[in-house]
Length: 328
Image (cartoon, rainbow, N blue to C red; front, side):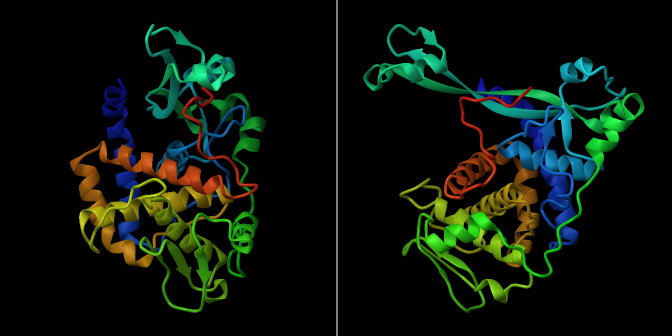
């Protein structure tokens, strides 16, 4: 069932990411997320979307020129007295729903009831994650501007863009560095390159004052932290690879999107690393060749972001539990 759903929505998501990467090939210094002045993707009630949907809906808003990343289902629009404009295409938002089934009797119970069971009894049940999705429309695909002009103006009002020229300070990241609470040691030292060593399980990064902008420092650090989540003792994602081969390029895309999603969570924009500009065309080729390639990437991105967000205090939750669903 999951594969059927993936096959259904993967082409639409992949088409979007291809368009986004194509904008980067002409200017690799352009941010992954170009506009942070309207906040994170959310529905009309203000509930934030999570996981890979954050990246997808931000990319969609940029490419389609939407005024704000506010989305709704057809039902939500009707409940608000709004009409979806004729010819509007919906976009899929995906989530995982957890089913609980007894191993012998095959009887299903609610997840909440499962968590109330003693640990010994829980062992008799299987937890089965099943992917679901629902279509959403952007605010600009409705007639709110005509029907509710004041509310539309309020929802599309942007905040002042942040000025990173004098150095951005990110409290959750700074506290993590001060306490050395990341999963492996992080050494900040004067130098000209950042790296993660799987064999030594450590990150080395230049000093913050060496970067022209605070966002560039935190982006670099998040990129290397992303790699470190793939260590065999953690997510087990890293493979033996050589610079430039397919596995290396894939891991770089995971790290790029993980850093972009974490940056959105922490309220700053990230740009592709200079050395990864050469991979943009390779990523495009893989996405065009196999649309479901993106889902494998997003799965690894979600796991990495979850691991990072769990270590950052006061960071907005960006990854949903498999048991929870997006607010439809």
